Length: 320
Image (cartoon, rainbow, N blue to C red; front, side, top):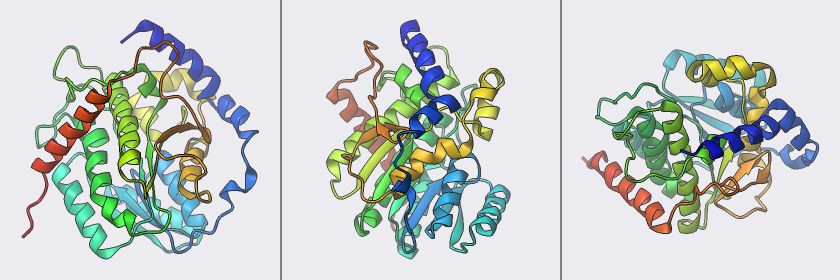
């Protein structure tokens, strides 16, 4: 991991990813982009009981959309639902309990969801940054299982449902942190060398961006995008990166500012930008820092998808 990449990224972050960066970018937003009526459209948001997921869910509910909150913790999910319903005056907010780090459960959930609901927009927001290295009950490294494999299974399993809908979209909440990582397909579960949860997370976020590009090329009927919310003051940042939070807290974005581009990609009238791009503050941006040598070969990107496909099949429930 290059010192150069880290330094360039941090300077960029101070300028662009902070509250000040958002305020500068927002001067160029088109105000009417979010004036939409979402009644009759169904949205699924993972990790929706706090932070950016919850802020996005609230805005969608306020605009009349049907919202499916996919969360791990029952009490927090129910509380989030209560708040969203109360503040948006929209009863069409539903809770689904799911641990994204359990691939078999992700498969089962996606299959049963499609039998009972339609889906227009999937927002992959759930994520974790676990340090030190931890294994799930299936023996998978936890960050990889949640951020990469869980996202891969949920998205690919829901593609048939999305294809049946009008103007289907998939928005994946990645992170600008992925800019410091080059795809490493040789060690997807961080078994070699010293484990660093922050770098594992950044690697997963790079993988999400590559998967978005690949899905966009394969499924032309669906609009795919990934995005960076900026540095926002969320419970996840406070718990996973306490030192960073302490140092930066006065410059961090609000949850609503972090959620703005997620919302814009999910709801603004039919996207004018091509599918498969990476966004920051409503603009498509490069997925690499200048001169950072972080590009991967098409062969490695293909291998990433093939390995995830192979691993995901292991956990696919057999039809009864």
